Length: 249
Length: 319
Image 1 (cartoon, helix red, strand yellow):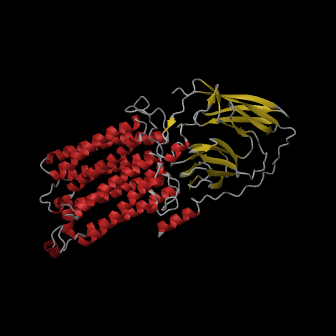
Image 2 (image 1 turned 135 degrees about the vertical axis):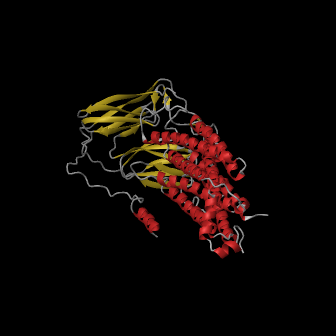
Image 3 (image 1 turned 135 degrees about the horizontal axis):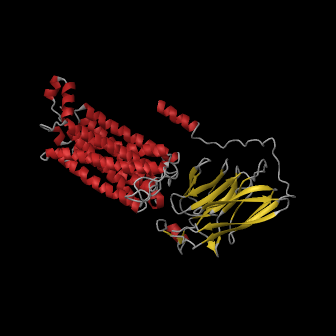
């Protein structure tokens, strides 16, 4: 009986992680004045030989095999002419007491053809993230959160949707499907809107950034992180480049 | 003729198969491929269609199916033992096995529902080995050799050595389970050296667990050498020499598999073979230990048995 009571208590307290109610704004909270805000843009590049994305064995699921007739490779390195896509670039530090409205529209993470799309995505704290499937096969959506509550649920009917929210900042939350072990996606959860995923030749842009000095970080799933410090004046624009070195092996 | 002893051996063999299936779940990282429990994707688990057992579901759902089968076999084992076995302590041992397999199922469900917390997953792995030990013990205690044993070897030093070896092997398996369920399997990436030397250049929790498992292998090897050397005195006693030989052989295989696990970068089949063979090392150490303790069982039973009962009901025969 005691053991049962302990389990019930665990289930009722420590193990049930209900989203915390949003905390009120700090007393010195301020909002961004877009008329004086600037922008930070730039590129993410990869220096050195481009690593090969290894082929993925998808024979275990005939649906995936049909959906990806030309085969699949891992999505870790999307590189063209030295430009690196799928890096998550964000303001890591320096925003102080600015507060931001949380969008109510969800960010979508879609499962299609036994892949996640997008592979890397940004979402705001308390903004819904809608996970959808278009596949006529079973997927499980397993969020390996470390700061937030992780979750794991199944989707097996095309068109199925489920919404989740993360209540704390976390860079990055990994999503995986344990049925199809190659399926991976990464979500950066932030309390502000200053993030982007490098694309179209490694490009990124952070708009409407208020004047100040910021630590900007670029994260890549295989290459780790890099940071730079940027100081923005009123209506200022800065361009920066993050250069990752290709792994030696 | 199917005897209780043969049936207990069947349950022990199925438990080895179950450990192999569980090992494949962890080795292929499929532990959460079925997100619900006790159902499978909302269906009663026995009605889940075979054609949907794809990818990680094959391993996780297959593990659940084999586990259910072993649970069912254990229920029969407990009922059968309770009905035909004259020794009360053996009957209760079968009940303990049944309790262990039920608890094991609950732990397996909890670890899925709480997203594989290492303490629960390690507990699940530890209880699996304990359940195997219970089924092996039942097979030993119901064997004709055990029941008819005459003039068993009475060597206190052998008993101490064998029991200590079994305990060390179990501890080593717990370390291995901790390593597997905390993702420390490649925390030290080379073998037989450690980052090119004898000691890790820096210590983190995964490196410490991995290194402890390697040191544990040396300790187990030493303990097995001492024990088998002692058994060598009783070359004409098959109840001791056979499990000792098996222990030595399984240990050699285990060391080779341990090296292969690192050198193949945690290849799932190799990884699982290491888990299964580890269970065989434990099982053979346990059989040897029980054999060495045979006279102690006799003395304990003589102390507790009523004089009339001991005459009227010889070991193994129920009136």
